[in-house]
Every structure is written in C-alpha cells, then in structure tokens.
Length: 222
Image (cartoon, rainbow, N blue to C red; front, top):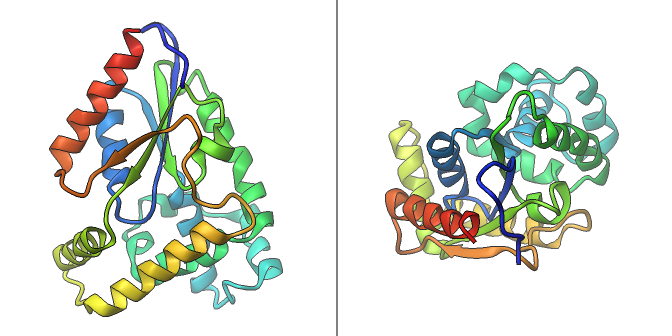
C-alpha cells in the first residue's frame, strides 16, 4: 500500500493504463482540481514518433530514431499531429526500444522531482510510471476498461475531430498496441503491486474523476 500522506507533503501521483482507458482525461482533471503539475509521458514518445515520420525514418530503426532525440522539438507536445492514429502506432513501436525509454526517463523523473515548478505535487500518466519512472510515487492508479468500450471511445474521439475511422481497423490497431505494450522487454505495461485498480468501463469522465478524488482524499486523510 502507498504510504499515508500529510496535506503539506509534495505528492507524486502515478497513473498508468492502456490506450483509451481514460487515464489521460483523468490525469488532466486531477491536475486541474488539485493544482498539480502534469506530464503526459505518452506525448514524449508521440513527439519522437511525429519527428520520425516527418523525416521519413523507419520507426523500427532504433539507431535512426535515437538520432532525433538530442534535438527533439518539445513544442510538438501541443500539436494536434500527436493525436493521429499513425503517430500513436509509431509511438507504440518506438516505445519498445530500451535505448529510447532510457533516454526519456531522465526527463520524466526530473519533471517529477522539480519542486520549484510543481511545489504542491505532480501527476504523470503513461504506461510505466508506477513501475519504472516513479516506483516510489505516493499514490499509484492503474486505469482499465473493456476493449469494446475503449474502441468506442476512440471512434468517438476521432469523429469529433472529423476523422473517418473504421471500427475493425481501430480494433486491430488497439489490440496490437495492447499486445506490444504488455510484452515488450523494457518496461512492459502492468500495474504496480501497490497500485489502485480503477475500472472505467461503466463510468463517464465525471464519475471517474470523482472516484479518483475520493480515493486520493482517503489516502491523504489517513
């Protein structure tokens, strides 16, 4: 179990889970409610993937991918290009590379430890925050949802963006991504032993946020 905290402590919250489970929306909502710093670590890999695609680099060529890291354009974090399916798929491939994960690890940990930028606390979401990036995080949440629900959410997200998507293609891509994330040799997707499991299958965004806020409040008041 995560240690009980005093309200005055700087808090590190790790949120992990598969694609379209709702972890990103939850993490952003918590950051706003709690006044914490927030880092979507998946955007790091998506920024690398976006750069790789723009330069015509094979996302499975680890040497070529590593060559873009020293001059990675962090302004890409706010780009809509990062949220395309092509970039997401390439990011999933790139995330299997131990050399890339190790390179980006320092940035993620530095963000979590930056008390000047984030004096109250930080929330990081991704695939290996509670197990690798911040294994000593004060609170760990692992977000899950049934595959069919996740596919529906992704289709609705793409529809809002005006993107025409085929359900079976989304299903195939998401299933492949789940398999890749869970079986990679470096930092596979899995819940930390002391993580709280949050199933969002039958919860909307508001219910999920309230559920997580109640959990956090219980831990803080112990």
